[in-house]
Amino acid sequence: MPFPPTIAEAGEAMRRGDLDPRALVEQCLDRIARHDARLRAWVLVDEAGALARAESLRDELARGHDRGPLCGIPVAIKDIVDVAGLPSRAGSPLRADHVAPRDAALVASLRRAGAVILGKTVTCQFACFDPSPTRNPWNLEHTPGGSSSGSAAAVAAGMCLGAVGTQTGGSLVRPAGYCGVSTCKPTWRRIASDGVVPVSFHLDHPGPIARTVQDLDLLLAGLIDSWRDGSTEPIGSPKLGLVEAFFLEQADLPVREATETALRRLAERGAAIGPARLPAEFAEVHVMHRRIMAAEAAAYHRQSFAAHRDAYGPAIAGLLDEGLAASAVDYAEALAHQRAFRGQMAAALDGFDALVMPATDTTAPPSLDTTGSPRFQSPWSYAGLPVVSIPCGLASDGLPAAVQLVGRIDDDARLVRVARWCDECLAFREVPSLVA
Image (cartoon, rainbow, N blue to C red; front, top):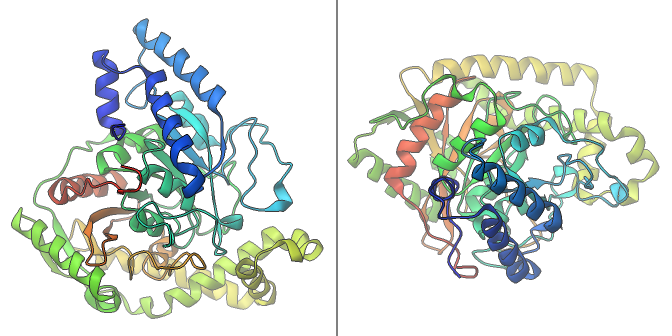
């Protein structure tokens, strides 16, 4: 069975009359039926609802009503995001009986754009650190990352053409990198979080996952009303600031080699790559990020955690204990540091179209007891800067490696233009042999 097309390819085929929206949904449903017993990427598949929606959109297209590039495209939604009539269990037994009364704002936007909601994908408990049951489609004994584990694995396995995840520390970029797909963490608050179970009010970022940056662009147009205010065609010969301190220095050998190979390829195609320096405030970023995340998660979970502590996994329980013990003075200090660091990053980007660095410090770890380290991703969640992560090749261990591009606040469209150029140069289009 052929691997499903990209979002861009599927849209073009549907507009030529060569692809039926129902047939595309059926192809994804078939892949879920064949592979999800092993991958465990899905919490719930709304087969009847997805097929009915596809048929309705097929009829619209036949009448000449085209909602745009996402019309008829099957997508998955992380199970902390509300989809009307479906549960949002957030990976927790405490929400076993929850049913969403209405769509989250971002889901409503996708529906208006013509997307077909296939169902809900697995998340780590309350989108934190305790590993989910999802497996990595490149190697079932390696973590897919978290907490958007099901969303990344489902896209990598061709079970859907795009997905929505969220990132508070590294929960979009890390699983996308481990699973060999692309993602965008937009500027903080660029995509509304209404109807999304929160982790941290100052750190949470919903965002799309897809196989290519062109597909991310199409998903972002469906998620953000003002996205098409500027051109998102690829920008040629970008100026990239390479962040060696911390990132390239602390990446393990397979990731460092894959990153250096990717950078050489970009330079050969015309990218100007020079050294970039991080502000002094970077030294405290990880400590302050954890402090904000712990305090705000504890504020949300305080009553439930006190009444049902045993229902919480050990990692999130530890985070909540930290947050409950934090002082107001320490929390205020962290928020002040966050504002200062965000401001200092404008200077770090001066003279560059984007910063570039490895997306993860290792490829997917060979353990299902971890979701991997968020230390390469959390600085950009903390700063609220937009990020695009692109798979750049298979590392020497046979697993995907990725680079991440970091842009300026609210300059997401320009960052995606740079990322599209880089993605087309790197041209990583391999799929996992387990699901090929």
